[in-house]
Amino acid sequence: MFKKLIQSNKPLATMLIRAQKEVFSSIVGNNNARTKGEGYDFVELRAYESGDDSKYIDWMISSKVGKPHVKLFHQQKELNIKIVLFLGGSVYFGTKRLKQELITEISALIAYSCVKQNDPFEAYIANDDLLLAGKKSKQLFAVRSLVEKISEYDVFGKKMNYRDIIGKLYKRLGQNSLLFLIGDFFDSKDLDLRALSLKHELLVIIVRDRFEERPSELGNLDITDPSTLRCTKVNFTQTGLNSYIKKVRSEDEDFLLKLKKLGIRHVKIFTDENPAQKIFNIMSRR
Image (cartoon, rainbow, N blue to C red):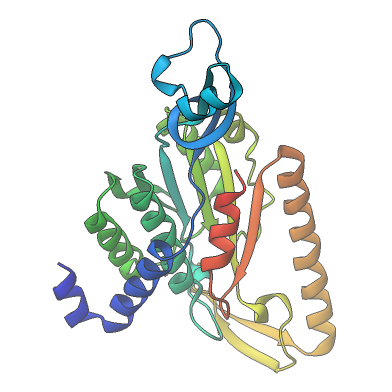
């Protein structure tokens, strides 16, 4: 399958190789539970107590201090990872590269990290419907299949319906999971994550192009909206731009405030950035 991908889409294959190399050559934080028990990561050394397993006694330290001491470790638990991709028509935009391409790379980084840590992942595409994009898996081939599906997904004419999507996610994802929600999150006033955040741990990844937040003065242009496929006249004069920038800033501030109140961690990544380090940082702050 990978040879076929290399032959048919070399840029996508190059991105996959880069993402895999960044994940497997980097120190990505393990998904440690907050309880102490059997595992791989050393926590502390303490005096032996009745009921402790004798196989964890550190005999060298015990002989030095004259009392038996045991080693404690982080108990490692398998996480259920869900990658939810908000692919409306608006992601078909970018001055450096398309937001859809950046979302594809971010998904590859997360999925490869799951494979590295032996955590199962599955993925969904969300817009006016909720589609399964990748079945639950821990295998490398599942990452390649997911990346190909995201890259080839036709976003034209797809509009975001946040209210319905969140309701469907709440009903469909019964098991407690770690959810990565990835999209540009424009016009997110109807995006209410309260119920979902009580059931799952959420990480929000906002994907933007810098031009969207601070566009240049270009005059009056006819632009086709990829979400509705309607052609409209847009005023890119300074007066129109000031009004637009103010609106985007206000909506973003409201959205980020909602995330803060719910304790939902988030990160913003632009199309001219390498997303790897930001993704690793937010994944390690668990």
